[in-house]
Amino acid sequence: MSSDQFFGLYNYWIVVFLMMTGFYIVIARKNMIKTVIGLNIFQVSVVLLYITMGKVTGGTAPVIPPALAGQHDAHDQHDTHAAPSGHTPAANATAANETVDHGHADHVTELAHELAHELTHDATGDAIHGVTETAGVIYTNPLPSVLMLTAIVVGIATTAVALSLIVRISEDYGTIEEDEILQMDRRQ
Amino acid sequence: MFVSVSILTLLAVTAIAIARMRDLWAAVMFTGIFSFLGASWMLILDAPDVAFTEAAVGAGISTFLMLGTLALAGKKEKPTTASPIVPLLVVGITGAALVYGTLDMPHFGDPAAPVQTRIEPGFVEKSQHDMHGLPNVVTALLASYRGYDTLGETAVIFTAGIAVLMILRRDPEDCDHRVTQKSASTEKKGRSS
Image (cartoon, rainbow over all chains, first blue to last red; front, side):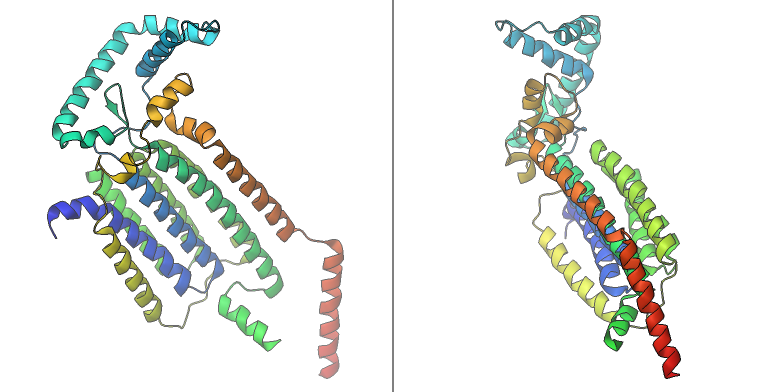
């Protein structure tokens, strides 16, 4: 086990540890609310697993800086210049913005290019070509984020159903301990 | 690096504390803290959108729902008599298998990982062109490229909402029925004694 491997994989191990803690709570605790808490912990660790996979060293959040975004829009306008409906008010506003911000935009692009240069020199060969890169800025993969946003929201929906079932069970049985409920069922 | 390590340590400690805790109210509060720490790590991992959602949904709404359940269903966990050896064994074996599975995973932050290269990695450029300069790529993906996915998610939430309402609804007739049953059973008890 080299230290290289350790620092390359520690994120997965942390996530596995958290996942197993959640799993332990689910199978070892008889209280139903505790079980739901365990499932919640498991879910957060699965989300973390996906998010750590999307991270790129030296990357930034997949939000394009306004200066670069304006630049892109300008490119877009050049592309569609021949089209008759090229001059929407919004496009005009962005163009005006860009003329105001011009010096600033240039500066940002320059910085971004410098950063990208350094990174390409650090990385090995063509590996860097795989990464999402626009105008010299490296962005972390947005796809895991999108998938996990959906997963979190679906998770809260299932948690809500589970909790309402618990409320219902406690109304009918007067307890939310699994073993007590099983005993009551056997006695009947 | 220091921030990252301290957040991860706190995450692990919080998880163990939740597993050992008997007081459900405290456990729910610690679950909120756990979600919030997770959100902090997501922010470090360049996923601010997921971090916001986790902080709002995981640490906010979920804690709120659990506290509501506690108010209706009791706050104390009964101490268990069963030994924790079998669950610990199961968890240990599963964890070891998972760790073994990570050994040939791409390293953390590796730009050549399959996640980064196999799906056509042009979302940032494409969304700039398609969405007319919308700065947040995650929003563009969520609402447009994976719009049907989000529609399905909305359907799931709607279904869950209906399910919760139907589970918790008190039918007046049903209630009367239960009350008469109860009184009948007490009557029976009275007679037998």
